[in-house]
Structures are given as C-alpha cells and as structure tokens.
Image (tube, rainbow, N blue to C red):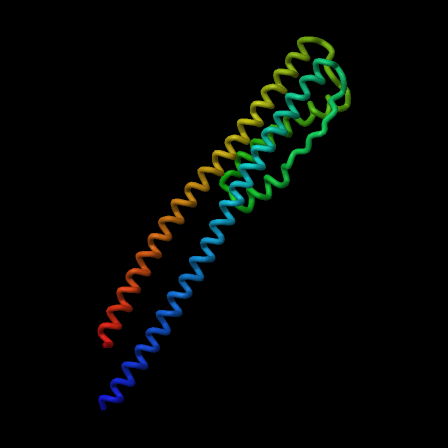
Length: 193
C-alpha cells in the first residue's frame, strides 16, 4: 500500500510539475512576444518622430522658399517632396491617437496648395500690398507646419512614455505572479517530501 501511495504521489508530482513547467514556459513565451511588440512600437514611434521632423522642415522650406519667388516675380521651382503617405501610414498603424494632428497638417497643405500651384505656374502678384499679403500667408504657413509637426513629435514621445509605464506595470504584475507560482511549487515540493 505504501508503494502504491508513493507511486501515486510521484505521479501527481510529475503531472503538477509538467503543468507548472508548461505554464511557466508559456508565460515566458508570452512575455517575449510582448517585449518584441513593445520594441516594434517604440521603433515605429521613433520613426514617426523622424518623419514628422523631416516633414516639418520640408514644408517650412517649401513655404519660405516661395517667398523668394513672390519677391522676384519669377515662377517657383519646387524640388521638395513631402512624405504624407508614409506619415499617414505610420500614424494609422502605430499611433492613431495622433492622427488629429496629421489632419491639421492636411488642412494646411490644402489651404496653401492653390497658392503654391499659382506660384509654380508663374501667377505671381505684381502689386506690393498683394505681395506682402501673400508673403505673410507663406510665412505663417511655414511656422504652422513646423508647429504641427513638432506637436506630432511631442505626442509620439508622450505615447512612448505612456507605453513604457504600462509595460513596467505589466512586468511587475508578471513578476509578482511568478513569485506566487514559485512559492506554490516550493510549498508543494516540501509537502511531497
């Protein structure tokens, strides 16, 4: 009878140990996946900040460069490309909370689009008051583009910090759960002995 009881306790120990091993290894796998996902999100938030910074500089250069065209009366020659599609894709996938700032950037682009097209086409105002008014719009658009992109960068940074705090809280909770599990295993092992 003692042999059967010992075998039964051994079998129970193997089953419980196998379950605990599976549970622990699954938690480790899940934790690794969460870490990989977190790292990807942080990399993409950094990329959003880089693209937004580049976008702000390019838009500012586009609008401030047009001022020279207004002053000289010559058609505006543009060699600047704006990565709207890239920024929109990154924001849609990784930071939809910031998309409202991108919408402001689109509004600015749409408001200034006709003016830039007119300058490229050579339709430059001749009268000084009209030139000054147009230069004022271009200068304001240049500053607005930089401010909006700066806001996107700040929001991405804030989102990254929030994500890090949440990740730390999750890690602490997992560590506490693992400590409780380890305590239960050690208690079981003492009981079994």
